[in-house]
Amino acid sequence: MPLSSIMESFTASDGLTIKYVVEDFSDPWLPQDTLILIHAAMGSSRRLYKWVPILARHFRVVRPDMRGHGQSGIPGPEQLSLKRLTQDVVELADHLRCPKFHLAGSSAGAIVAMQTAIDHPERVKTVGNFASTPGLKNSQIDPQVWVRKIREKGLRGFLEETIHDRFPGAVDPGFLSWFIDESARTNEDLFCRFASMMKEVDQTDRLHEIKCPMITVVPGHDPLGTVSQYKVIPDRVADCEFVVYEGLQHNITDAVPERCAEDLLRFLLKHRAR
Image (cartoon, rainbow, N blue to C red; front, side, top):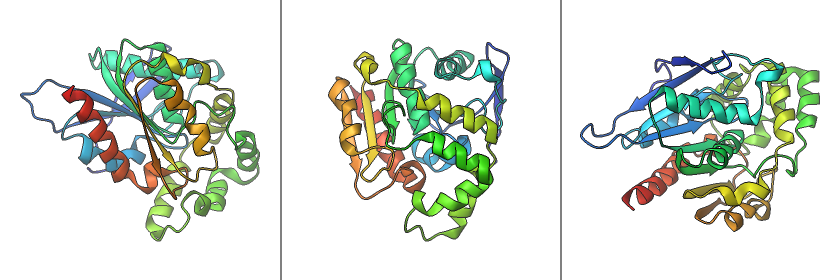
């Protein structure tokens, strides 16, 4: 799937422009089933490009740029909240005339996905969580440390300094350079506001409200949280498959994108068959 896929847009209810891409190579005689993929912070829909060939053969795959990311508009202070991010997902689905949809997210995008399933259970068929604890409030890393370093070194400098912590042992310098270039496109002030907002999120006490089937895929060596911290999710969500990628760091959706997409596809097809 080329990175040059044509982006479309819609206007959110607060006036902000949200960009998105749709790919669908599913059989046209079958009922249309929509999957919305939410990227991580400091990312965009482009970061999930390797997922598309695997998933779009079976689903209409929709990849929005979260507000403040990619080509979507940058929100003002009153336009950035977790509630607003979940509202964007629902309004995008409304724009696409999709009453119910599958939803999956990476890292902060998974926090948005879980919150959407909590706040709008009637809309979400299944939810996929890749590399996210239920909010960052109790995570092992303080995003305010990131904010201070970004203010000091700039976003690109921060990324260059931490890239080998994100992808230890990575042997493709082209990928590392591309990851830095893509992430450094993010507006620095926006990311600092976004990280501060996410640091206040703790969904633990509402996880039981996720009633749809869920898959949680976590890295075995994540500096953001231990496997035991991740296990609070299957402990509280009634129908949750739990998968651990041993030996990997936080950025599993970029380090092993095909593996993530294949596990998500297996999960989705299993529950669609039901």
